[in-house]
Image 1 (cartoon, helix red, strand yellow):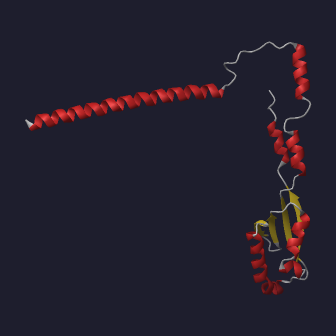
Image 2 (image 1 turned 90 degrees about the horizontal axis):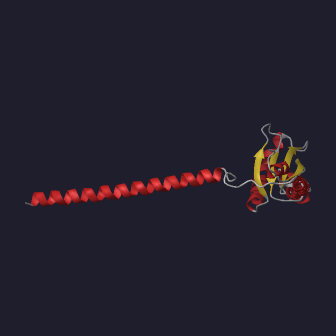
Image 3 (image 1 turned 90 degrees about the vertical axis):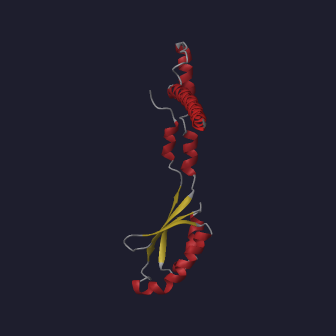
Length: 182
């Protein structure tokens, strides 16, 4: 008798689990279908928009309003004048023969690390040919970069000079703000 009751309970439990699985599968199918429909609608947003008739005068007015400024021209003009960092390319001077460098380098490394921790140097590199260092500095004024680099031990000893290049946003990317030609 116990065996038949356990079998019935087991069969009922299996049936309930099968029903739950079927409900979940149908819900998933409905969600997938709704998501696919929404994706197809967003892929072509103009598919359901009715085309309006535009007479030639309205077309000319649209062209005139569109041609006043190029898309992104305001952003490009601002980006052309914006300095966000200074690239400092250092070169050893004649006062820095290779045999004199080891004595000053520990203090140079410490002071350079202090500038990095203060947020004034973003990245630093060594030139592959060993002719100097390259810093990407978090300053917007080349004069500030020059003052900071001159305070370093190699700058004070006149052992390294830097070419300072103000850099900013890649402003030609502003051309991508416009609508593509059709």
